Amino acid sequence: MVAMAPPRVSAFSVFQQEKKKMKPQLGLKKGTVSKSSQKLHKKNKKSKSKSPLRNSEAQEDASGKLHPITSSNKKKSSKNLGKTPCNVSNGKGLQNQQLKGSENGNKQHMGPPLASVLQNLGQIQNSRERANTLFEWLISPLKPEEFFRCIWETRPALLKRHNSKYYDGFFSTAEFDRILREDNVQFGVNLDVTSYTDGVRETHNPSGRALPMVVWDYYKNGCSLRLLNPQSFSSPVWNVLSVLQELFGSMVGANTYLTPPGTQGFAPHYDDIEAFVVQLEGKKHWRVYSPRNSSETLPQFSSVNFNDGDIGEPILETILEAGDLLYFPRGFIHQGDCLPDAHSLHITVSSFQRNSWADLLDKLLPAALQIAAEDDVEFRKGLPLDYLDYMGVQNAESLDPRKQNFIQKAKELIRKLAEYAPVDAAVDQKAKAFLHDCLPPLLTPAEKDHSVYGTPARWENGAVRDCLIQLEKDSHIRFLRGGIARLCSEGDACLLYYSTDNSRVYHREEPKSIEVDAEHVDAIEYLLHCYPQYVTVESLPCEDLDDKLAVANMLFEKGLLISRERLAPIPCSGENE
Image 1 (spheres, rainbow, N blue to C red):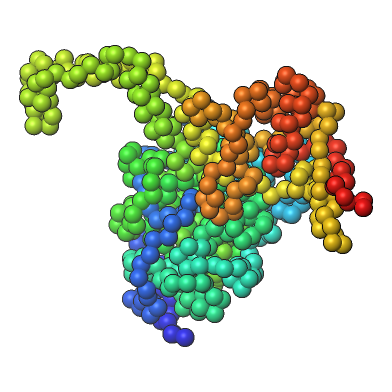
Image 2 (cartoon, one colour):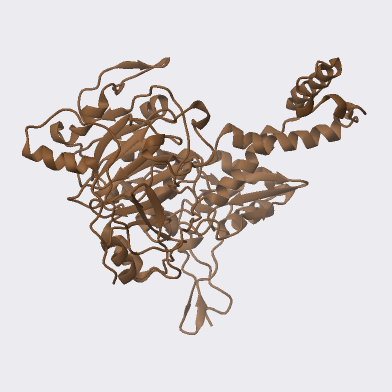
């Protein structure tokens, strides 16, 4: 294997080493991070991996003088943030405070292990409540209502727990190693090998499968390893993300980042997602910067890579240790580097990619214009014969009165366009896209036992056994989860879109849907609205019992329904011969 020069050491690392020799100081001089001139020997063509909800490298945002929110199990001061009071610190002067946060916070924040949390979620009947409960654990001790009122989309938040075991069971380097050995991990598709040295961000992906010997050699030579879709390989990650997506109403994705001691894998950048950085192992030095201007606030796309000179001074600088969490909204520039004495493994849980009002209007306005053009002759009238003589950039300074009349007419039509806006239909289009993006649910044991997935149909002793299960009129049924299906109109047809047959690999499958007969639409709508309550098949609003049984058994066989009672199989034809 090719040897590599010693890894770069940041100014912050040097400061920490010197600090051990001297009396502790409160402040840290900010500035650019020094990098060694030695570069990686392993280099390949730069590649840009396609990954949904990735921690992509750069985007822009602006927020003036925002201060991060922190929680360190200290008594919180009450400050007004905007118009709504929030019972958390406003974060003033946090740079120095948080640099020594791991030293002076002496109380651990304890919590149940993830395995217990996920097991207990199975006892909650409403999947939306499951999502709320899991998110509360993820950001504890911060309260979800406080988070969404004071922090969401506006400022970073730092949670120092002083409990390295808090996120145990989520993901680990041992799990990463198992995945490399047992699964078909492909460079550039599932795994990126990256470095950031002397201000240069590089990707070193060879082609083909990422075999352990090659991957770990890159790591030993100072490269960071980014697993782009851990939910495809890890059941705990899949479970967490599939539950949380129901809280956000938007796909929840993740990347994991394994960084060697004393190195940095990515340039400063901002992302197009809301990011929850969950520190799993080791520690990492993080800097977060405000958006540079208002046009970069809550961006729709990730940024290019920045240099330290492009981004100003950080508003938050800290060492994230195992068990800690760092949140920052899309558009906040960030960078992280490893200290020389420890590796870092973190998972970034992300959501709200392309889930803004602008994205809804992108679907709504073309549909509104199509309807308006069909229904209103004003939209179909021809443009003035001579409009090119006084309109356009070359006539921008023209004082021709016809110009103002033209502009006024265009504005009138735009205002009138709102009358034709099919808002519900546009929302359904967003919902369809969301269901296509979604992970399939990881079923609890009870969900499996009471759905088609747990039926005992099998081949045994040369024959098919227990192949039929059918609902009866007094069977109690409901949808499997609250957010797995949605009725949408498509022209003259009505389709039920659903996510239970999706792949764990993003968009590997086409969108899944069932065309619903007109006489069954009310029954499906009734089931959707009744969730999480069970209802009897007989109570479905259909004309006769045959229709009620038909729609219920169709949804059950598609894996969309569960029954309150565990259903007994009906012997197959010839089974008892």
